[in-house]
Amino acid sequence: MGKQFTFCLLLLAILLSTFGACNRSDEKIIAVIPKGQAHIFWQSVHAGAVAAGREFGVKILWNGPPTEVDYSKQISIVEDFINRHVDGIVLAPTERNALVAVIERAQREGIPVTIFDSGANTDKYVSYVATNNYDGGVQAARQMAKILGGQGNVAIIGVIPGSASTTEREQGFKDTIAREFPQIKIVAFQYGMSDRAKSLQVTEDILTAHPDLNGIFGPNESSAVGAAQAVKGRGLAGKVKIVGFDSSPSLLDDLRDVVIDALVVQNPFEMGYQGVKTIVQHLRGETPPKRIDSGITVVTRDNLNDPNVQKLVNPDLKRYLEE
Image (cartoon, rainbow, N blue to C red; front, side, top):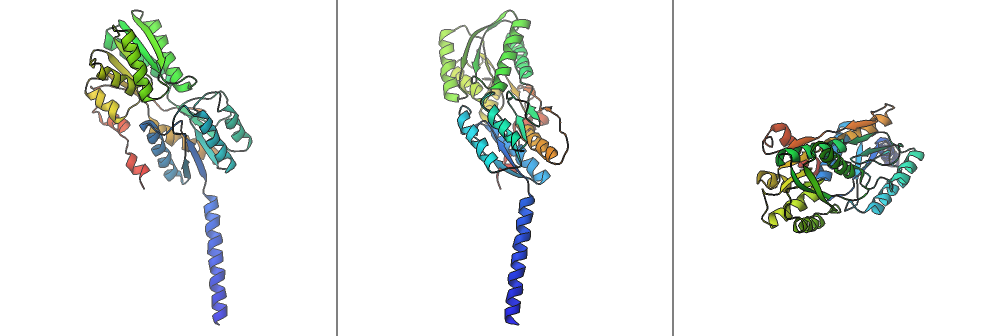
């Protein structure tokens, strides 16, 4: 009787273990790969992806390079997830050409990919979830013109060569200034290499070379932060006008303190959420939209305290990223 009871318990344990393993194998795994991890922007993307994972019952694996200039590291991360046979990949390509080969490899191996934030030169993806970045640059140029009264000298602190999203913002800004505001001159353009310290340095160089500068456009978080630090360091806050892109606690503080005049703010939480959602839809046999515009909002001191703006610039990251 004792041996039979022991055998039954052992058999039950095996069955339960097998059942649990089957349940685990049924859970879909979606890898989310940002350009970098240093900026608040990517943390908001992560929170949106986790929110979608909870809603749709999928496991989110998050990994990206430490900085946005290391596309070789990002390629190796994508390759690792392909080799692990994840069920889907949500990717923000660091460089529009360099990531094409691994995106197309994933597609050949039956792993669907959704692109977010920044494009790649391939059509082998499920959906592209992003801001209309060119329009973001257009809106930034019009805001700058409004602040300057339609005339003056401005500079652009570029982000990094080859980044599709920020290149589109920069081009939208340039085109709009040339087309709509002929009395505004873009007198300098230098790359900050998606780094706050480098952006600070190039802004200081531009301020030295152009003491009559009236405005600066920073097309992402690091460029806007670097520009603001340089302007504050030179005692030019409020004199040299700044239009930035994205938001972070320091950028919002500078907006309140009249160091920055406006921020063109994306919705990174929505990018992460929609990126995961499109993969889930694809895995269920549905056809998600090929292009999803996650939207932009121009934030100034006048609308900063609006509840909808506050929700956008202060997402509840702890709710999603702290277990």
